[in-house]
Every structure is written in C-alpha cells, then in structure tokens.
Length: 441
Image (cartoon, rainbow, N blue to C red):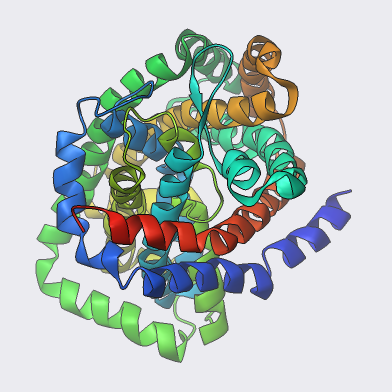
C-alpha cells in the first residue's frame, strides 16, 4: 500500500497539479486585474473593522480569518520552508513567493464563493465551502463533484490536520524536554476536546486569541535574528532570487539542486503552507457574519499574504542568514538549528514552542473543516461521533509511526484541490462579476 501511495502521490502532486494550482491562481489574478495585489492595504483596514459582525453568520469576519489561519499556520511555516530549502536550495523560496502572490487571488475567489453559496443547516449554523459552491453554483449535475471533495476532506483532515500534527508535537516535546509521547498525546487530547466540543464559536474565540499571539512571538524571534544580520539581508535576498533561475551548487552538507527542484519544491511547499487552492479555508469563511462576499474575499486573501509572504519569508531568511541551509539538515530540525544559531540558548525553544502552538491550532481548525465535510455527506447527526473520533485520533497520531498516514493525507489533500480548482475555473465569471459590482472597488 505504501508503494502504491508513493506512486499516486507522485502523480497527484506532479507537474500537472502544480501547473493547475498555479494556472488557476494566475488566471484569477489577471481576471481580477491584479486587485489582490493592489488592495492589500484596503484588506488590512477591512480586517481591523471586521472584529464586529457585519451581517448574518456565526463568527466575526476577523474570527473567520483567524480560524482559517489557525489551520494554515503550522508545520508548513517551520518544517515546510526548511524542507523546500533543503531539497530545492534557497531559490525555492522565490517560487514560494510567486505561488503566494497568485494564491492570494485563489483564496479571494474561494472566500467570495463560500459566502455567496453558503447554506444554513438544520441546527441554524451557516455552512459552506467548495462542496456547497459546487452544488449551489454549478448545479445539481455537478453535485457528485462536491460529494467527492467532502469525502476527500473528511478523511484527509485526520492526516494533515490531526495525526501528523500531534506526532510532530510529541516528537518535539520528547526530544527537547524528555516527556514520553503518550503523555503529550493525552495532554493535547484533553485540550482539544475542551475546545472542539464547543463548536465553531469556541474554536473561533481560541483562534482569535492564540493565532495573533503565536505569530507575533515567532515573527519577533525571527526579526531579532534578521536585524542582528541586517547587513547580510541584501545578499541573502540576492541568493534567493539568483538561485531560483540558476539552481544551487553543492556546498557543505547541501547536495545541490537544479532549477526544476527549486520550482517543484517551492511551489509544492508553498501550497502546503498557505493551502491556497485546496479548498479548506473557505469552509471557515462561510461561517463569517457578513452579507458581502467581496469584503470576506478581501479579508480571506490576507491568509496567504500573512502565512507565506510574511511568516515563511522570515523563516527562510533566518535559515539563509545563519548559513545553516548547507548543514545537511532538513525539516523542523533545520529550522531549530537555524534559530538556535541565531539566538544561542533559547532560539531552539522559539521553534519548539512555535511548533507546539501552531500544531495545536491546526488541529482545532481542521477539526472544523473535517466536521463540515462529514456533515455534507451524512447530515448533522454525524457531528458528535466525528468529534469523538477526532479527539481519539490525536493519541494514535502522537504515539504511532506515521509514514503511511502522512502519505495518505498527502494524496487526499491533493485530491481535494481537483474539485475545488474545477469549481473556481467554472465559477470565475461569478467572482469577476461580484468584484466589478462591489461599491468599494
């Protein structure tokens, strides 16, 4: 099964998928006349005002973005960036930026459609996302595609959003503090249960408090290192840009990487980090208390900007500035080494605690995504059993071997993107029309 999944993963995340994610993002960016780039400042102003409800929905527009970011900011920002650099060289960071720039339009389109085509379920809660905008926007003949997305999302959530996260936390805690994996798993289980059984409102309240805090602490640690090496920043940025087009020669423990490796790993890790095009974030945005799809779209696109353009860039600069990218390390270990080098004595703890909080909030955000997908397939009766299963899976992830789970999640995550990208392309005239009609445009 592992061999089969490896083959399928290679196809699902191969050149076709990366081209589709990039292509749909570029098409929407051009169709919107570069609006996501031009209106970043306006979007941040809207986010500040979005702390109050602006219409019908369950959580404020600000809470919707924080819930989406809680699921997005995670191991991708710490381990994902490091893996991209370890396999593709510093040039991979450039391609992460490009992926994020077109991904802003993708996230914008997803959030616009999520609010436009959302429904109210039989508990009175607002529900939406790709499965709903496929069903309600593309017509009954396409309902099967929405159903496929929901199945992929429901199962993939247990991998990328649960077991992989609890495993990375348990591993980090054991190696840094010596606590056994089962004790970490038990602690996460209890904390997650306290939040998840309170539904979207409790998840949103926790996300609203934790996400800005963890982003500021992590970015603050990175900023200290960057400022301490301020004179080297232009050279680091030059290395990132030149390596994107010339490849990277072997040096130190780094094996060298061709241009294609920089493109491939930069795009793949960029998508893994900000999830633009996967269709997960619009599930959170659909619950927003707003009657204006475009306003929520503009707030939604900030998720990609904050995640990749700000946080991933800071991680990348720390790794390049400290020179640890040539150490031969990869993943979270490389990030930990880089921060430890830049901030001797406590830099590694910034990464460890960042990883723990990031992973915890990712488990909360993805619990909501998986639950909404399960509800679409089975109805509201599935909610409580799904939550129970979700909490139990945390322990299995914390103490299990996850190579198979990681592969399965990777494949299903890619499969989620296919129905979503089809829907974004088919419904793009709706996105363009709503944007043109928006009074503030």
